Length: 262
Length: 307
Image 1 (cartoon, one colour):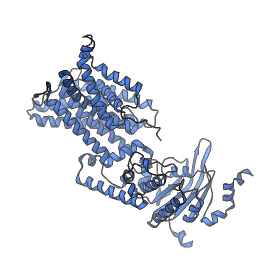
Image 2 (cartoon, chains in turn orange, red):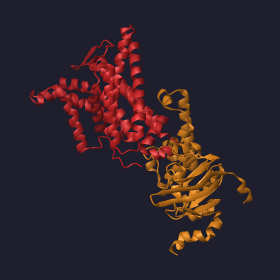
Image 3 (cartoon, one colour):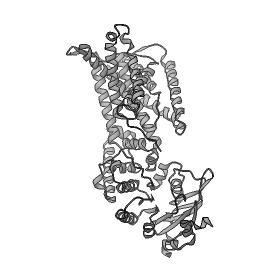
Image 4 (cartoon, chains in turn cyan, orange):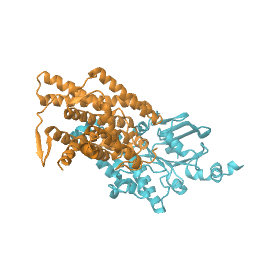
């Protein structure tokens, strides 16, 4: 544990607040995610987990607080800037480009890390063509990495549910993120698929990408995460290693509802 | 039968011009759900720029081919700039406004462009300098000219190029991704502002080429020519299913043929009561018909709500 504490934070949330009308979705949430760890974010439905993701990726503008990412503040008022800084995400409700092939979905993710623009698109100079070939190769590699290389030419809409979730991960990885945010990646998966997903996330961590994971599958979270934060009614009520979180009285109350009934 | 074949040829020529203009409408609509009613005016400016440049160069003794090429290039560059400017000044600030607001702005912009053109080029009809000696060919009793052949082949090339752009390039992929879900595309690092600007710029370039074609076909241009042409092309886009690239092409060609056949037979059908100058009514009969019976157009799919 002592060694782990020394690695610098990749992402720091400082008292991030967000409200929708009278509903306080996030109340001064602070947390710090270290380089190279898998950080779990759990909590009952409506606790503010996805809201935090949306603030982090520039979809929402927080009403208070700030994010420090890789040493400098995240001025994410446009999602593509958050992506450029190295934050990629998947979605709780899958949002692929349904009418494009699996391969094309991943290729869109490469957009950021390549240069060709309008000029190249129209005049098709050799550099542009070489770059586009490289985009496709990398996309194929990523499909292979998540294990759906054989579905490359299928429309995203026609993939099975589990494959769509993997495709979302491949597409996010294509942006070469420093921080990969997964929003309930195991939702709706069966036991075999979840086990494969776990291996995939472990591999991603080993390759050096930090992972922020929202998940309801307690077994997956506890087995995979280095540290876990628990949100309840927009507030962080606990942050610790999985074993300690499982014993925490406030967490147990939050999940059983006891704390709010009393 | 001769009338029929002749009108099919005329319709094909007119239709390929409609198709090029319709692509400009449909690209912008597909990506941001906006009908850019000022697009017809962009085409009109393309025609007038070409007339000025080609006329000037030819008066200075530049060979027709060079003058023509420079004229087309100038029209394309000017129209691309106008398309970019329109998006930047008129539509981008209204990106999150209610849908009716940018629509009214579009009508406003088309009035602005018309008046600018009137100030620059005057109220009179301008003649398009004749670049090539147009020869006539005859096949099975129907005749067609070199200019007609050129119009159809250039538009075919442009459309093929556009398809390649959209389905084979990085920019095209970003365009399709943005059309499907701008928010997610943005999260994947696509700069939405640039993709939308590119749609305007590419659409305007196609419009400029169409403008030069209209000019060289009718050999006449006027600051108000854009509104009728724009409406027809819009009709073509709606007929094919607005937002759909292939639909715009099919809709354009189909509308051109319907109009030409209508013009060819309207005299016989009404026993001489209406003449071929009533051909414009066919486009609007088509528009009303499509909107009443198949609002999603021939190739259009039902569009769901977007995030």
